[in-house]
Amino acid sequence: MLNNNLTIVRRSASGLEYAARRRGVTQSVTQGIATLERAQR
Image (cartoon, rainbow, N blue to C red; front, side, top):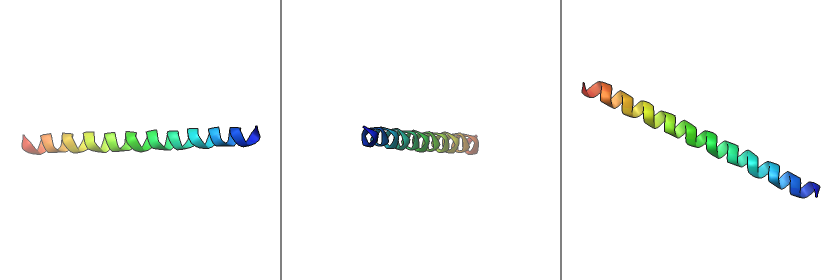
């Protein structure tokens, strides 16, 4: 039972890390696009 709980915690932790990484990628892409648009004006 304890081992199962550890697996769930580890899985949710990796899920949070994955979500944070995706959010960081999305933010950097958005900033890059904004910078490109500003440079084109």
